[in-house]
Image (cartoon, rainbow, N blue to C red; front, side, top):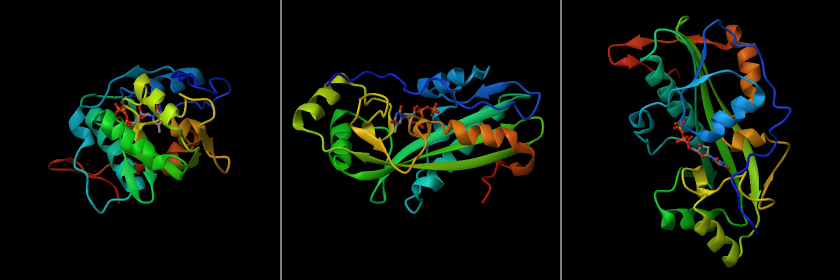
Length: 226
Ligand SMILES: Cc1cn([C@H]2C[C@H](O)[C@@H](COP(=O)(O)OP(=O)(O)OP(=O)(O)O)O2)c(=O)[nH]c1=O
């Protein structure tokens, strides 16, 4: 099998008008998130959050809690550096039997994750945060997509690890990298697996006024909404 990092479904992605007259800033260095936004027709600039925004894992935290918190922290980091702007940040992890799988540190870590996911149902959670700097209000949401990975043969596993396409991808796999090794179950969002749930994002842009909550700024910066 040939593996290539090609995003599927690049046409017909939903797009909504932005909820404020601020320019859209993507607070993410993920090439997939940029590709998805571009494909949907959004104009935006890219300002990745600093690495410190993605730290401080809490052992009791669930996958949805973690991605919500990281998305918020990434948005807060970029918001603190801009006088205006509609900031969009996100975070994606895989989760299998309660274990959270983030980006692999090295090839051994990637192999261990792929062996864990092989032949199993699992979830991918993407949290995203839309933050209006001028209104000092934001929305944080999490979307779950359930997946089934086929049982990977030793050849497939070796070939994928060799391709290095697992680098920088949660769970050490790219939904977009293979033809049929992953199946999205129950009509879940494919763009959510790749890092940004485009369908829900358009709804949040549309309903921002109803959904957004005030950002509480404390001494040490914005506190995470419960
Ligand atoms: C599960 C899965 C994840 N991914 C990617 C999306 C994200 O880029 C990455 C998860 O890491 P994230 O920490 O969510 O994002 P990032 O480090 O790439 O970028 P930033 O923190 O600046 O926003 O995994 C895929 O490309 N395909 C997949 O199938």
